[in-house]
Image (cartoon, rainbow, N blue to C red; front, side, top):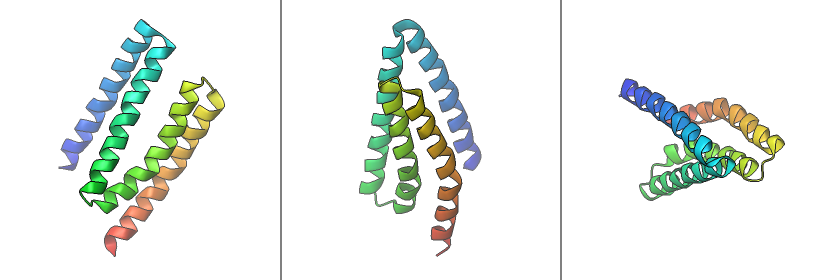
Length: 108
């Protein structure tokens, strides 16, 4: 199961990079904003779906990634590199914290 999930994540990242390059080459900065808004919409939809399915551990894990990605989206939207880097750093800080919290909450 984890190998399938890992392959799905690798394929999604490669597809996202390829799609973003194509869209940004064709439409410029506005294409990147549209692509990021689609990604944010999908993430929020997945978040709400998990809440309705009562998957609380998954909600805890995903909620720590939604906020930094929204901050990064705002940074791209207003073309501000400082906000974009802040969102990226926040994401890198929250990944290990989220892993520890989810592991501890699953053990209880």
